[in-house]
Image 1 (cartoon, rainbow, N blue to C red):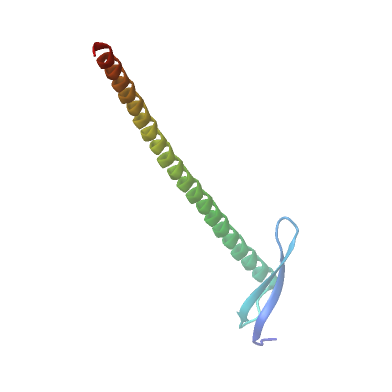
Image 2 (cartoon, rainbow, N blue to C red):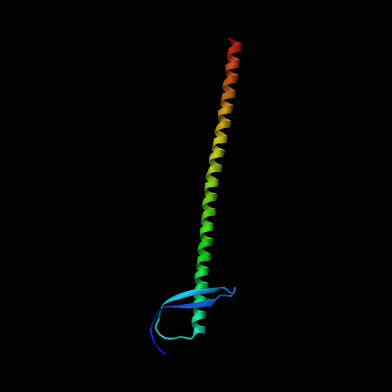
Amino acid sequence: MSRIRLFTELSVENPTGQARAISCSRSIFPMSLTFGARAAQRRCAREEAQATAADYETAKLSLEAELGLDYFEFAQRRRSEAASRQYGKAYADNLQLTAVASKEA
């Protein structure tokens, strides 16, 4: 029988044994169910691999962004700590000069 079928639904089992429904937009000629199932499995595997790769890249990008933020936060804290040390040293020097000047007066 050669007839045109629109929106044919095909059920395929993947290696884990779960059935998966795949809808094909057009089926112009009848094809062997085995070939169709294998093609559908390959397409599903390819789509899953692309989704997994996209998830990996998303996670990698998130970690890189977090690392960048941590780096800038760390650099800011180091600069703040250095400024605090310089301020404390200048305050101590000023206090010492004031003490010496008050003893001389």
